[in-house]
Image (cartoon, rainbow, N blue to C red; front, side, top):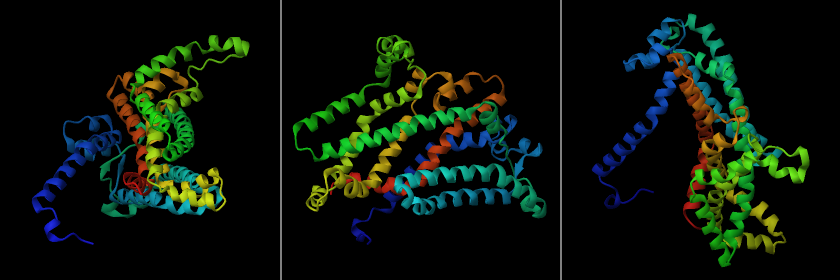
Length: 381
């Protein structure tokens, strides 16, 4: 239903709004797009003063590593097909383990399939068909993944990726489990203590991470001596272990999760769970069978923000994890610190781009749940 003409914004206001939005998108997206292009070129092209050399990679193409017009179209089709396949795959897996498990398995399977297609299927198909396609099969843009192979295989960046997934998965599972229960209880509680709990949580969340980590660090370093009277000589050292770091990140980020989920639960009418109680459900059954299905977009949205808080954390993971168990974000600094040549610089850029890929993939997959979840939490029902 369109607005009456008198209530519609003027053409000049629309032009200003769209112009500002477009300018903001260019400013925000340009650095990510530019370093992505740089990471796929030889150093002579990546750091060229001519932007056309950076984009088209003439020197990279002359070395025999390039992609044709057909290769570009095929790569785009593979990416779009992979993202589009996730909802259908999740729908088929939902009866086996619930919606959350289904989306997680389908996302992981799609990511693995996309990587296999990118590194095996796509090069094989283009290598066979390009010679038969004439002008459409000629190298059009310089393109090389050697820097990514060097970072992930020779630099063993995959170990940092695995550590990141362990830490962030633990943070998300614990935060969402505790946050949903606490948020629902605080949203339904009529006592003043609920208000003060939220205020204390907000104050705790507002503290700088450096203040909190400075309190955790001595405990982590001296944990063996602290626990030895209780556990004897088998007392472990918490420093460098992912599991204690997961609990630290949960403690730091849990107030945000509780506040966000509490706002979502507050938008659900209390009559809904009261009706379930009248029909014979316990509090836990009403929460699990009635409230959570309605709240699912809000849970997905909060889980994504919790994932981002754990995934992008630098201070906690860099101070409390050793080099062997380091996550991706702190590990990037080591790539930039040890760069000595232009090739090392491009490899460091490739490592930085690798961090953004999982985030982009998650947002593209869960965009519908994020939008509906944010909308549900914005207006109280």
